[in-house]
Length: 420
Image (cartoon, rainbow, N blue to C red):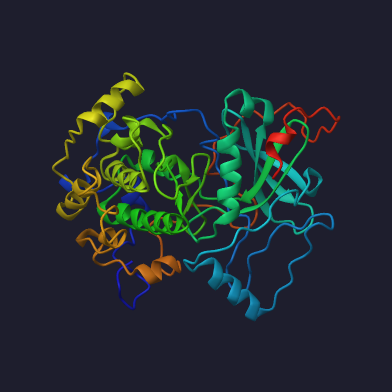
């Protein structure tokens, strides 16, 4: 990630250094400080692993799944491949693309379940047409309506339809039947950053910096599109087979031109202005970036309490953070300027915006242009086989017994999801 001519960078770490950090104050394990998976403040379509359906090694371009005459085969020349790769790896604003009714369940063969949630599950699937692997998120309409998540679900589709960035998951299309909603997305093979963090207990400073920098670029892009993400956490960060991050689960993402008041997200990561239900803006994502960096460096979140979410909220409102002695001095300085309730001092919310974060001394050696082009080798390469539907980095789940694709004409909620 450093600005040098070698392919080997200071962020290159042996896998054993990540899973088993070296001894010493800077890499001391935190033992019992590691925390279990967190529940969201409000139920959402969260913790659903998606993945990288389209590989882009050599001359393999980005390919969308082909459907029964609805979406034709994508044939590209080598020049067009290069253009597609550059477009996918460049931080640019994009116009919304249509995803509605683009595919059908018959276009795919379901392989296995990758994750489950409150409203459904995510399946690894293979296209019957181009034979590539994708992830399909299946949401039960009745459950979405029952949990009053119609707006969030439609927002997720709209946000994913609008964005395109190297560090964001791609939505290729959506469709529905009488009972379910379907979202066809990338299959990201490397699994959740959360799993890697729990195995290592905490990350070495350079490793945390690498992931934080990729997240910062993605958040900066979203904010440029007028979108607040609002659910940053390791569970929503997936690793592609090259070790780069993809932010997934846009269930709480929202277009916000100025301020909003909704209480949503994961308790450990909520900014104080969200907890107190004051109006808030995009700066809540930069607070969450601070919490993420803290958790990567320490193995736990600064306001964690095993008792209940309400105790976490109280800790957040008190604002007292105990920083371990082993945190790098530059990282500590950045964290103190991100995890601050004072919006007039929080980096990312000041006149220079995200540049205050990018230019901070903790990120001094980061070459942001090379990073967004994915030219920096990741510190950890997941042990997966690319392009063959390798889901070894995901937990096994009992398979769904309910039949998909039922169209019996009884669809009481279809009008609520017209754009699917």
